[in-house]
Length: 215
Image (cartoon, rainbow, N blue to C red; front, side, top):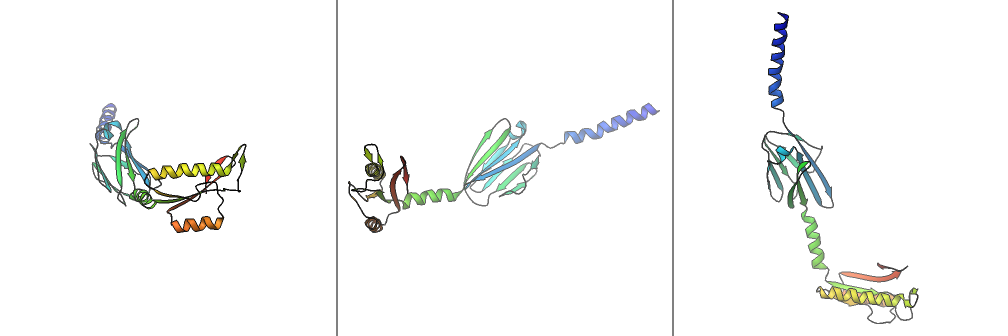
């Protein structure tokens, strides 16, 4: 009689525990990182789950459809809205941007790189506005600057200024050199010259301790 009760108990335990084990949801991990206007969102999980997902992206939204019900692990507070449905995950970004996605293995994961629109706007503005350059080759005339063996600093400054000016001119920029020859220009004259040209960028070239620096 006792043996029969034990067998019934074992069978009942196996019967009730089997559905629980069979219904265990796969783990899916959401990770993210941010740096200088860019953000990376990573969805990581088992190969059989991540490999069968389908993704759709727009300027401010990411949707991931999974092959089965899953358990989502979030890293705490995230800078976007993540909403889980039964077999899908929706990520709503606060701002529109350019989204690129790719897949990686070991472990299986989907990577979304989000580039903020402010980065592109800053680059475009810099390209548009920086059209006029004034380049000041330091020293000149009786002001030799620092000597390097048989070379004077003033000569190196002028040579670099001319090469830089030529390079910018080839790119369609308007370039003014404060001095084009070995001549001395007082500080006041340099300032007046630069103010008259109203440049977007002013560069003063000076060699110190054998290193060229833009001041």
